[in-house]
View 1: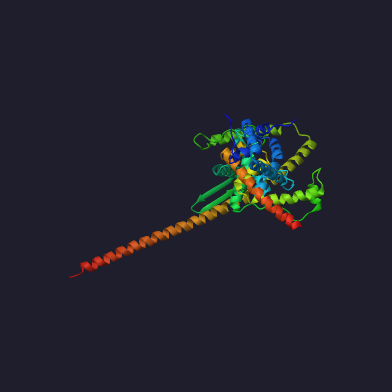
View 2 (view 1 turned 45 degrees about the vertical axis):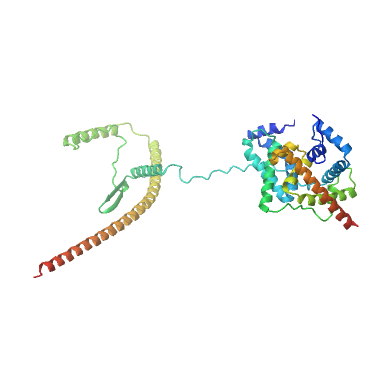
Amino acid sequence: MTIVMRCEDKERLVGYLYDESSPAERQAVEAHLSRCAACAAELDSLRGVRVELASWRPPAIDLGYRVTREPVVAAPARRGWGLPAWAQVGAAVLVLGAGAGLANLEIQYGSGGVTVRTGWGKATTAVSPMVKTAQPLASPSGGVTPAELKALEARLREEFADDAHGPAPNPAVAAGSHNDLQQVRALVADSEERQRKEFAFRLAQVFRDLEAQRSTDLVHIEQSFRQLEGVTGEQVQGQQQMMDYLRRVSSRP
Amino acid sequence: MTRTDEELVALSMRGDTESFDQLILRWERPIYALAYRVIGREEEARDVVQETFLRAYRGIGNFRGQAKFSSWIYRIALNLCRDWIRRERRTPVSQVPEGQDLAEIAADQGPAESIEELVARRALSRIVARAMEQLPEEQRTAIILKEYHGMTFQEIADLQGCPLSTVKTRLYQGLVVLRRRLNEQGHEASGMAQ
């Protein structure tokens, strides 16, 4: 099919201007331009515009964009141990219980308030290092019979006697051992003292909290009683008014 | 070894930021030139470039490769330019310096270009910029994509979302208007020079 270009066919002229025509279109445009001076002049003027457009350049600037990654921010340290609240409470109770056990602690929470006793002031049962075997002293029923006590006394006497008849210790070694023992005892005593003070401090905090809670509870209970009394008083007053009313009604002639 | 855009895109999709940097290096100047000519402001054009590559980086996982990477980022940049023009509700304003800084002029001088030719070209550049900014947005964008980015009619039609014949019409009408404006302003400039 032969293409024939007309003057109004500006799309074909633009295609020819930008060199995006098919061979058939190109041939048709060139044939038309050879015959039409106006279209040829227009094509020249449009080419001139394109030359002028080429002079428009953006300013030379430094760009240099790059992909940068934000530094990885460490997650804020969680307060506490990262355990759920119930586990922390459980752990606290365990620690408290273990501490109480170490301190030979006795806690009573009764009508007289909170009573705390540490076992350190009480006489502790001294266990002789020479006792090799410890026999149960308590009978199955829970009591100790005189015969059992006598048997225990006899056995202890025998052990003491055996120990007294043993080889005599070297005096120098005995003195050194005695000094070491003294030092160990002093260290243990210091350690126990520190632990006791620390534990007493912690306990004081716990019991301050407990006392504060107890006071709050008492206030609530008192308020509840007052409310109850108020309600009761109103009921009594109402009953009294009812009685007065009945009395007045019944006394009417 | 120079990698193609497609290869760099594939690497970028796997998290290789250096490959994406190469894509930026390859395309930041054309995108800047496009944005500058469409909206006519240097700083805003810079912002468009930055936002274009930011969006491309975030959306690289969704790039299916049906179009060329260049077409994809051109579309992003053109949408941003269009948003800017609509937001500002005004025609672009070319920031062409009035003063003639000789050092700056010399830096812009081509290898075979005398200083007189350079000064004349810069004067003509201002005239062209002012003529272009008076064109309707669609005509201006079509001329920019064709004249300065060498796109085909079909590529422009795809970017502008219009038929191919519409692109040709926009180009013709835009060039005719420019011819008239350039003649007018050229006469004004020559009259002022005299």
